[in-house]
Length: 213
Length: 252
Image 1 (cartoon, rainbow over the protein chains, first blue to last red):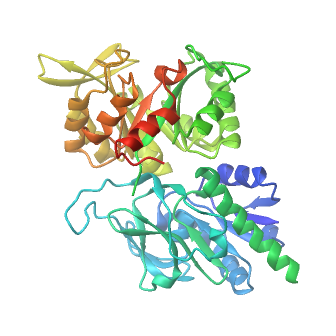
Image 2 (cartoon, rainbow over the protein chains, first blue to last red; image 1 turned 45 degrees about the vertical axis):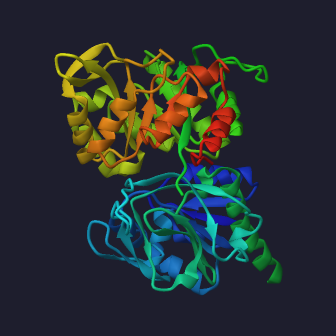
């Protein structure tokens, strides 16, 4: 069972429908108690970073998520949900995140080093450049495009957490992960068959883990 | 590298797709979900549904359509037409649409763009601009109400205004070119992109695959929308993308 964390910030409907298409059972809830039995968690998210952290804290979700991750439960953050996994964000005001992965969320500048203009938000289908194709989340992804829409991205001092990136004004971390913590900057639930494969790979992690227990 | 997007547009009235749709493989030419699925399979990058229902019941039906499309497809889609309040936006987005498109309501109440962006995020607020060249003005003028009503706004000023208000994207339709099938309005697109930084979807005038090459290579649009050439099978999304690839335009 996958738990989809409902903290009032996200297109939960699309994520839950994607899981239905994969035939994966899920619980969508705003209550840590109701999610307690889930073997994996998805943290979706659309909106602004400070509002999202505040909503997570008020719902008692911050402690819950940190405890579950500590216990080894696989976690997948999507879009803003991925950004929340990092140390802090510059969006609107400097705000602390969940601090599960190293890095800061910063805004696109609208230009690359050569001075070429780039639009903000980074919106549309971009190629997934795999840096760690051996990562389980990237199983069976050969040459894929995925759908992005965001104005902030992760700047991390530790490139080993970047499993795949996309080329824009800079190399944008697209799939991140370390241990049982994963995130995608793009929306896998809106990224056609490539996105569905990535979601399936995440769900398969639970099966593997469940099998060992 | 970010790819250029091809976006078929479907007009929906009372929950059914209207205007001629000619596909041999479909059972029901009016079913929005079935048509959306076909465009998805052809490689459409996004879809736009324009609700042209005139009644309250018709609009309620649209919510059901949105729900079904979101349950079936794994590509983003936008819903526009008759959205006039935060409540309307919430209903459409909750039902699973990724973006809402505001047109007349944004002109009537520009605050709505800001409120929508604050509530739901800029990424889901598209402002649709219907533009027609005005000799007297020496520029393009903004029209509303499906192009029937001229406004005080000059297009470039309006584009800047809505970007500053929090719009995440512009859907720019040339009324001069719309239905002409002689190509997109490249001058209009270039002029607007000079003054805004958000992505711009080109609309109005697509008649063949070469027009898409022009709009991406010459006018540097981020996406291009078309209705009838896809519905009447004058070309397909697949074919347009093949020709774009042959011309060195990056597509998915």
